[in-house]
Length: 75
Image 1: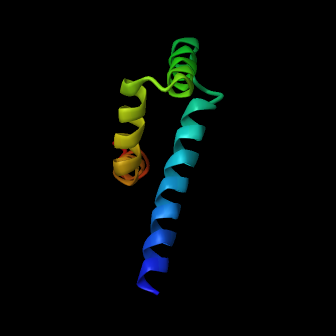
Image 2 (image 1 turned 60 degrees about the vertical axis):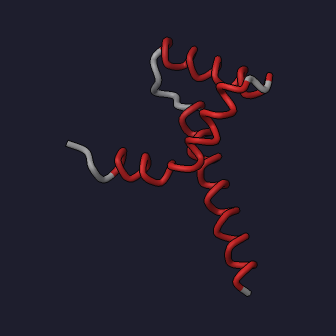
């Protein structure tokens, strides 16, 4: 039972992070420079560049804090 809950929570955590990353990358309101950066990051992830993979892993670890900061702590 506990193992199932841990696996479910982990899957939801990673799935939510991946959806958040997908939303950032496909943002229609992004300017040309931001869109170009997003596409460059996706290319780096596809090529398996270490810096992009480490950045993605760190983002997946802390994405709830980033989401809360973006949505609830606005000035």
